[in-house]
Image (cartoon, rainbow, N blue to C red; front, side):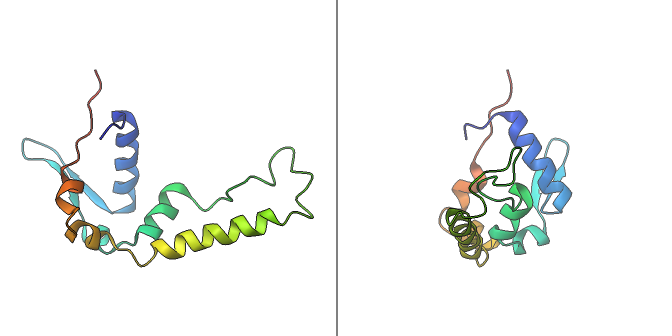
Length: 113
């Protein structure tokens, strides 16, 4: 997987903080998916990792002058809710048990240097 080591380290740290994975040090160390991690929905994970902020920052600084009459904002909010709703029934254990599971589990991260 072509992801910088520092990015993956941050993601793993967040997953540990959420209780989704456990890191084990040493010769036979690595990451272990916890029971919570196996039961977690992909929708929940995406919300926790990415947040639920709006797709477009209408209330930014300065706020968008169209926000009071904009119909796009509601459509984008609906699309975002539909995105999460589609991911909510997908559970991590199902992904790992699928034919793609061994590939997912075998992905390596390039080390710095």
